[in-house]
Length: 131
Image (cartoon, rainbow, N blue to C red):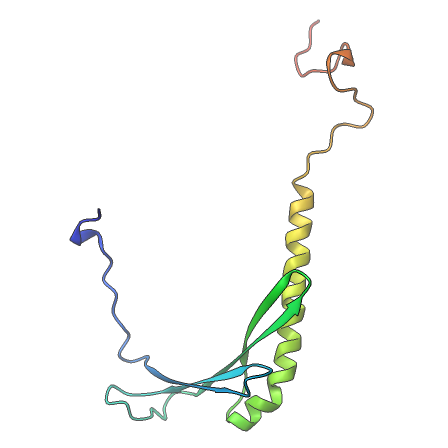
């Protein structure tokens, strides 16, 4: 069991607070709006409002969650940019899957061409060389 002193101190950044609103059509996805606020909860006009989109796509391997930032100033603009955000996030997910597949394939150890495995390999099959 961890001692009380081993626990990290977790504090919220009072100057980086946001109010979160989620908008969804309950079909295609959702848009999250983060509105900056001050300590008293009022809107902080000195910082920009942030938007992000979320959706899920059904694939043969199962459900693929997609999350992405949306560069927009209003909810209406975020709604218009949502489809393009999904396309970009999907392309990135496909690229990441290809890279993971490439990395997995490069980990496969391939024996030397023409090498005969086992005791029948004869001289020169190992790393130890005799004069």
